[in-house]
Image (cartoon, rainbow, N blue to C red; front, side, top):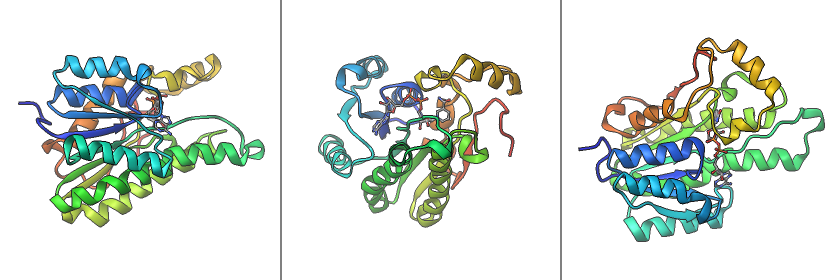
Length: 249
Ligand SMILES: NC(=O)c1ccc[n+]([C@@H]2O[C@H](COP(=O)([O-])OP(=O)(O)OC[C@H]3O[C@@H](n4cnc5c(N)ncnc54)[C@H](O)[C@@H]3O)[C@@H](O)[C@H]2O)c1
């Protein structure tokens, strides 16, 4: 028996990187997985194939987490196929860089809408069912940048600090009603998101990382499995940090 046998899990942004890794790890633990991503189905095929190889057919729903109608359509599709959601992973996120003095309002809005509003919108559609059943897990993928800040990423840091605040507030609201809400704040993890960084950034970041290397997706997914499974039953409103020692709180 896997740690998530028979659970239904929605993972946003699951076509790539950390989300894809979590979707596959959940499937390997016996969960039914919904891959919700703004990309088209073709881009999601590799993760869908990996989930299938783990013995579960994933449901793919093209979804823009920042759009209320798109999120409502996701909820309807999941309801029709599975009738419930046990675990929601709010992972969809984008990262851009700009100094505040030159950052456009559009860039600010795009990052905050995806990372923070998207987390709220998805939570809002799946939480009521969890509360009705008196059980559920919500895992929000934040970032260590939301804890310590960073140059040229104020919008990203604000969105991720917001995700951590939302995690703590909601955890207090719903823990006694059976829904456990926690966050994961990874350090630099090798994904397409990190690939977009400059060589100069990679060199200086590596030099300051206590562990001396970037993390892999497989070094984040066990934390998501922990928080989604019975093993994580006493975590409430926490922000766990697979970050190679980059941030120590
Ligand atoms: N890679 C890192 O170093 C790192 C570190 C800390 C936190 N994170 C966070 O982890 C999460 C996943 O990042 P990643 O590194 O795997 O990135 P990634 O770019 O590999 O994957 C992000 C996925 O989110 C999807 N997405 C983007 N906007 C969306 C939207 N509006 N609606 C639905 N899907 C959308 C993309 O299509 C993509 O499949 C993000 O929230 C990111 O901020 C990443």
